[in-house]
Length: 253
Image (tube, rainbow, N blue to C red; front, side):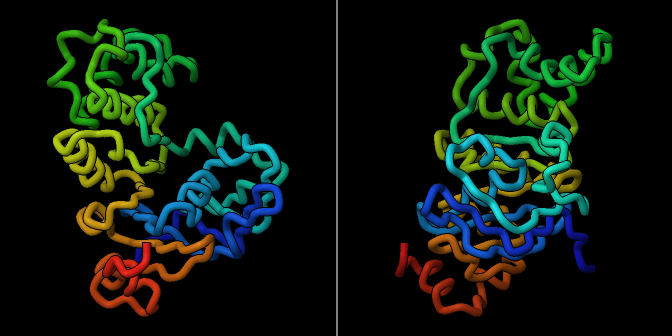
């Protein structure tokens, strides 16, 4: 069965000053799959990811042309409401950035910002999303502990729970395990595999083994250009482009 398209990228170009970071990218991102964006450092992976929630807007000198449609809405349209767009996206960065507050308040922060004040409902939300991020059993007896006191791996899962608590449609993950130990990385990966039943998950990774373990769909970028994309099995087992074959074999990096 063919997947529905969740994000449609059409002739996307991104410039940082005079340097072109993305060159005429056109791709459809399927819904409720794990999509891995792969390619060497500096190829535009993170720029593409941050185009999906317009985080690149905050970079001085950035210029964008083309269209990015999320649920059919052009997010770069001058009339587009950026807060509304970003509410659809949960972002998991390379290093965890828990808010300077308790474990409980980190997860409750988003719902409170959106007006939820009912304590019983907040309790339910905190428990549910800590379970979704595989953290509940480790912290349920110390929810009032400052988030800064738990391990880095736990902080990353807490950031995942915080992102999920605002009920996004899409999870954007920028090398989310690069700062983690193998055990913590495995827990994040297991969470992703479970969460793809409900969310579109787009992960930037420089680890091919991770992409092979997780991805349903692969996007390969090189020097800002889209070289090849398709179902993960096809890309890894029978890539069409010579450059893709060389990258997967480790000939180019």
